[in-house]
Image (cartoon, rainbow, N blue to C red):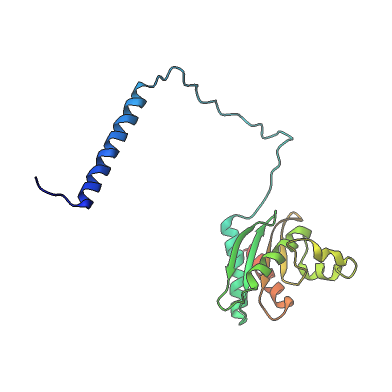
Length: 186
């Protein structure tokens, strides 16, 4: 009798075990009765006029990407290394671009500026001015009251926002964010 290697024995045993398992599953499946199996429930029709439903308007991922890229391109042409974030109406990040050479704080700052702009439907430069009257605003989680966030509106309501961070001033950041908003009109 010829000796087989450990590898060959293990491989042969594995194949045999798989074959036995497949045969067992096949036998059990074949003997199962289908008469007791409940039918799948029919699809439920939803009345789109139902007052319990809410509809929302938002940017497509393509539009959000175009806006972010336009903001980043504008900053790059100005010689600035920034990050750009686009958030939806709920403040959820849809697109985040960290530009070449942007600092490590820039992505999070861009997201927070965008979140702040969409939350109050106003540019963050305007919101920063409100801190004098209501200093506790800065304590709201996820917000950043520095210039650089611009809301995207549809019929006056916020549907998204663009935040930019990394330029030496918030005014530049906001200028780049506004370039992203303007790109959506094209």
